[in-house]
Length: 74
Image (cartoon, rainbow, N blue to C red):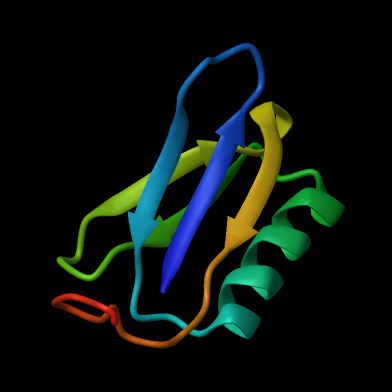
């Protein structure tokens, strides 16, 4: 699943490919923001951890669970 996080005052976004479900990602980010936690931790497909400051999150875009198609679409 593709996750894109917009960071405030930054022209770039953080893009993560994770094996977690959309519900798990939504729950983790929502809980961190509601509790006022300073960071939210996300893990990508390769096991890398991303620590994102919750105060700097501008938006979160959670992509679909479907795998990418390879080749020409016609």
